[in-house]
Length: 156
Image (tube, rainbow, N blue to C red):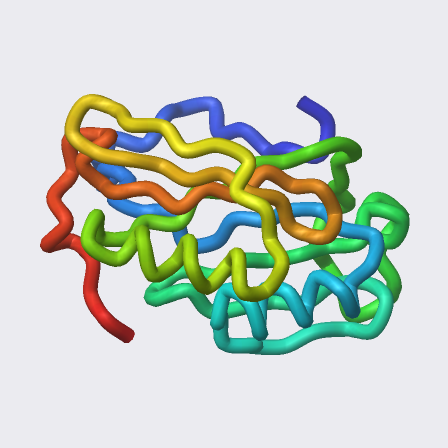
């Protein structure tokens, strides 16, 4: 546990349960191709970026972070106190959509030349799977596959 400071006495204050994911990340080596895909095909709003290192998107009230692992796995430069991180290989990210919206999304992806790798009917919902330019496995799924309500989805 190097780099971590531990108190000899645990806090007596109860921690609030975690209720949502704020950000998630995938690793890509071609940031320009990834930026165009997530912006133009998926329609995510570009938040910020740093040439050669990262590009960040808003997705509703969450963030999708794309990092170049060749850079993010190296010791951070001055002004970037973020710990090193990186991964190789195909990652996975699932976006929540309403069941009624899946056909329109499939049409949009196919119009952009994106192949639908698989469609799966789950108890309570459906998923479609496809790849981003880096080979990451992306999924559009209805929240009901996890027993969650579609009412949790809000337009932003």
